[in-house]
Image (cartoon, rainbow, N blue to C red; front, side):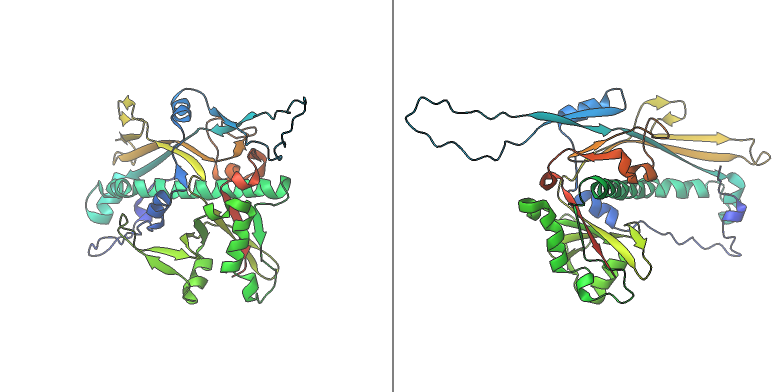
Amino acid sequence: MSYTAVSDIVEPSVFTPYLAENTPEKLVMLERSGILTPPTSEIASRFEAGGRKIEVPYWEDLDRTEPTVIDDSDNKIQSSKVTASDMTAYKHRLAKKHSAKTIAGFVATGKGDAPMNRVAERILAYWGWVKEQRIIATARGVIADNEANDGADMVYSVYSDVATPTAAERISYQAINRGRLTMGENMDDLRVIGMHTHVYATLLDDEKIEFKKPSEAPFEVPYYAGMMVIHSESFPVVMGNNSAAYDCYLFAPGAFMHIDEIPTQPTIYGNLGTEVTRDPDTGSGGGEDALTTRRFELLHPAGMDFDATGLAKADGATFAELRDAAHWSRKYQRKNVKFACLRVNV
């Protein structure tokens, strides 16, 4: 178990407030990009019920055979049928505990509550980071399944394992359009692109990023090729012998069904979403404070099926388990799964 202790804190001779590494604005952008959308009320009610998984029924599309030409014969027209199927989404129940020795706060600032106050200030940013990681891990798992089982029809690659990539092997309007084209006639649905910060930096160097300030956002938002840009060092990078392959993800609005619930059932320490506890005996009587936070989550890519077989714990998947192709399989037609992968050099 890990604790904030005296050794973890810079001890200034004259106290200076610590510089805070605030969470980037991309987490706000993530919420406002539209790629996360609430499910139907029926699915939401199932999330609130017991159990670990949700069966999501859906109607398959009508067939695309041509119509019959009518005539004056006695022949009966042949009918086509509409069929239904279902996909499985999963509930993930998550918790995080932060704790600090009281003495650590006195040594750092002269106030015993200082470390836990900092935890309280940053806990929402922490859960925002978790959401980002789980979105990226889920996208990686879906693409891994696609490459293993569906002929990589959601992936367009211009990557080459060469020491000096050409312009054609880097991100470009043309490459993005080919990535969007993996959705066929639905290519225009893809409006958000997530990329590694190194890829983003190359676009900044080339002055290819356009900044716009939406009326509802307190900051400017980057755009490239008409798509909102979200960048993070967490997007996938795979090293080759000569260069790294960078995966960019292109998302459509509604790419993920999403519920982020903070449980509110009362407990003696607060509620299930936020509990504050104290052990006065730890630290040879100095005491220790702890803050435990919990989130219940549905984060499911539209058109995919989640198989929980093999999860280490029955009530949720880790980052690594979300990245595992074995837990995913596609149910929708490719053009109705709302994201794609573009693989590039930098």
